[in-house]
Image 1 (cartoon, rainbow, N blue to C red):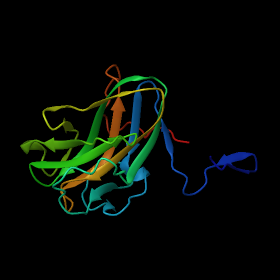
Image 2: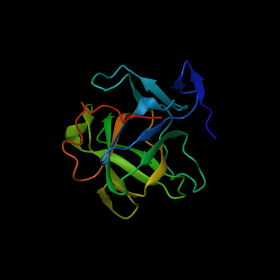
Image 3: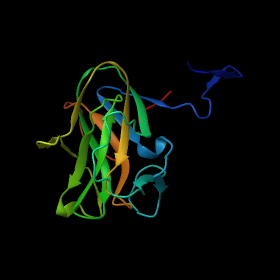
Image 4: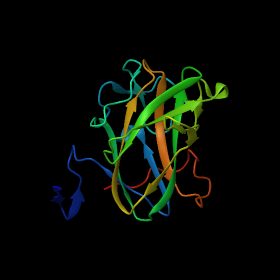
Length: 189
């Protein structure tokens, strides 16, 4: 249930109500700071080059075990897909060392894939390198999304600000220049 307040004929979002971002034309752009950071995720501005108002850093320790199947990730983003299909998943991230990673959960699924950025040339600079480790292989990251609302959650794995997250894009293969940092954040309701 959503609470809507009318003020002088205008619809106003109620404080604390989660945003639902809207995909348009096969593209969804979300600034990570658009969802409140929940400890041990923290907002930061000390590392230059981020887009939007800030980035989010994992301040927790290194996570050496895969999360329990029933764990719900606290740092979540809601979005609505109108055009179902395969969406490539890319996270703009900054890593402190050659290897840094985080877990991603889609729609509360009991399995959590392990996503990472791993390239020597991407250390200590912003990069779109995003791979998934399924436990048996490393592959390009994508989701097959149905029409409707979805929730994407993040959990850090590389501790003590070993990874910073700036924004993420979900896009279909036909979208031109889908990783441009000049793309505005998708509208939300």
